[in-house]
Amino acid sequence: MFKKKNMSTIYQCFRGGRVRKESQMWCPALKSCCQRRGRIVKLMIKTPRKPNSAIRKVARVQLTTNKKVFAKIPGSGTLPQKYNVVLVKGKGYRDTPSVRYSLVRGALECLPLFKKTKRRSVYGVPQPDRIRLRRCLR
Image 1 (cartoon, one colour):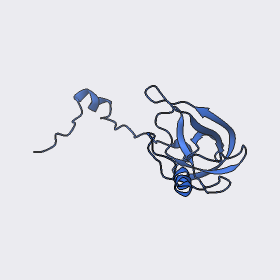
Image 2 (cartoon, one colour; image 1 turned 180 degrees about the vertical axis):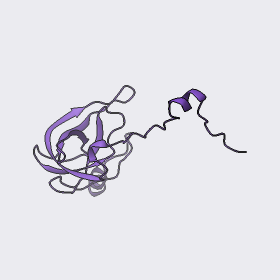
Image 3 (cartoon, rainbow, N blue to C red; image 1 turned 120 degrees about the vertical axis):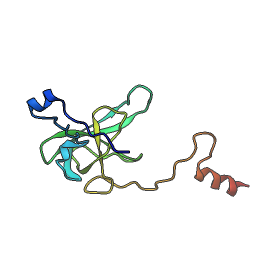
């Protein structure tokens, strides 16, 4: 019925009781802000850890706090240029080491995604443009 509280042992009481662990911050470079401005220093490609395989587009960004972080570039299409001013938020690739942040598309000098289409199945679903061409040719 009742939850058993974790009582500290006698030895722990002598040493000052139990100390609760502090939870780690997922994005410490933002310093409790939801977004930070930064400048792209380097553009690169990274690969994820073992079970996954892909090519992840990543940027090295220097924030206004003078910390350098890796940030993912979301979406396919035009990549931002080097030395562009971008907005960085939390949540990066979980499977790619050291990529904890992502860029915000459409803010500052990072262009939004134009002509964004919904993802289609890899197995045999034709592209929408080709479907229209086939209908016109019939």
